[in-house]
Length: 110
Image 1 (cartoon, rainbow, N blue to C red):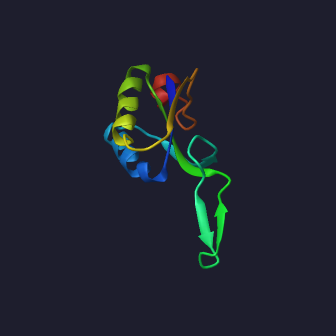
Image 2 (image 1 turned 60 degrees about the horizontal axis):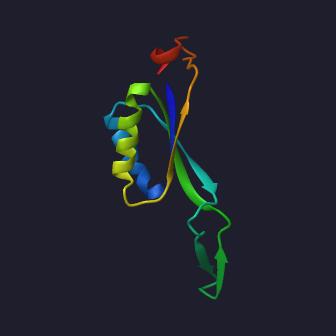
């Protein structure tokens, strides 16, 4: 099993979540803030007389756990639907998964 995490701009979430739903995958998304290569956004306030530069960029992280055989197709879908944006995809191993309600383990817990 693998954990796939994609850090993307908020604008990409509807497209990527739709693609993952079409694949029949369950996923979690949450707001994240961080510093990357993209400069932080400047925000004008006080009727445009002052400018503040945000300390962190805001993004969304989409996380799913899949069988090893699905990793490439999930990454391909994420790349297809986020072709014009910035972000990162991380893939890491998952030793075990346990469904708390059914007590199933491994692939059947997904």
